[in-house]
Image 1 (cartoon, rainbow, N blue to C red):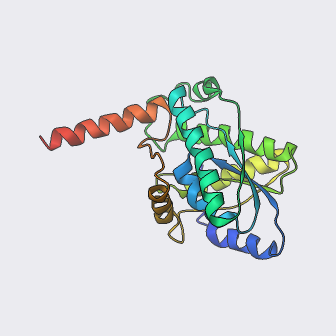
Image 2 (image 1 turned 90 degrees about the vertical axis):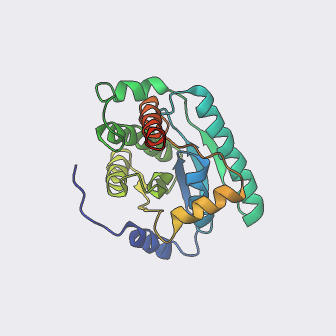
Image 3 (image 1 turned 45 degrees about the vertical axis):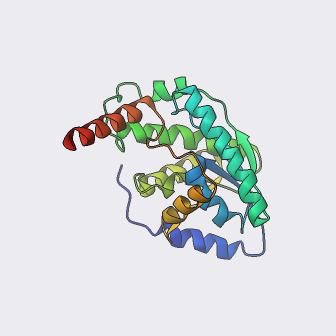
Length: 218
């Protein structure tokens, strides 16, 4: 899928300008506490937010539970500091859905077709939940990562929004030093920061990368 180059940060700011003085309901799909930290700090000024933690790609349950707990801890701590808080909704933990969606793509490199299938799964469930529960917008924290394809995520987000009848909030949260700020907030709140996306395939790829780096330094 090809997506034209678009300034998603500018589009987001245009939405914020239109909604000034209101507090629309936003469902923010999050992948982990570190990635959501800046998104929450930024968006809580403008929206009533429910964090939607739906990540069937995290195929190790202990890892999944750890990240979910960190997400809830961040929401509480950040809320106390900024005087606005988000609510938390945990989606079903269903790694089998991810494994079925990615069947045959296990050897794809990170960022390839397997990731697109994963994005589609997570954003489709987020869009459906947002539409069924009276939200005005939905979006995802995934665009904060320099390793994630923001144009692709925005394209999928719009498609799923059209499918379920909910407006996707455009974003490229890494802009305006968003990624840098997420690192600062992760350090401030001592958040657990994993070094792989979540699935067993990305973990194996990351471990192989680290093994090669170690070999080159011995």
